[in-house]
Amino acid sequence: MAGFHTDRISEDIKREIISLMRELKDPRVAGKMLTVVSVKVSGDLSYAKVYVSAIDGIETAKTACSGLASAQGYIRRALGNNLHLRKAPELTFIADDSIEKGMGVIKKLKDATNED
Image (tube, rainbow, N blue to C red):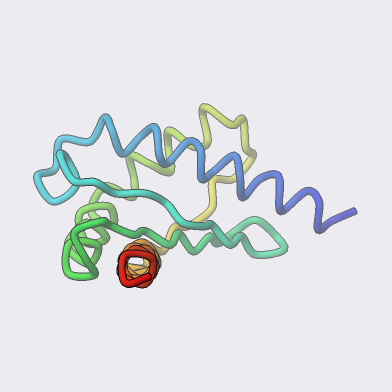
């Protein structure tokens, strides 16, 4: 039962952070093609690791993570208010290159089908 609750909270946090990223005015975040790949919340809901990926590559994701880390207070307050959490989790933003890897796989598949 506890696993279901943390999974639901993880998805809610993911959805809210994606919507909040559109509102941020930090140039490291605004105007970038970013997505939140996953959110892992601790069992007591005190900590959350947010995995952020960018289409432009891992370097863009790293700079976006630093921008999101500087806006952590705003994001935590908005999460607490919008999700009606008793305690908003402390967020850790981690750059992820899964979108870049996925684009590479798609390119390889297209090249393989064009050769046939």
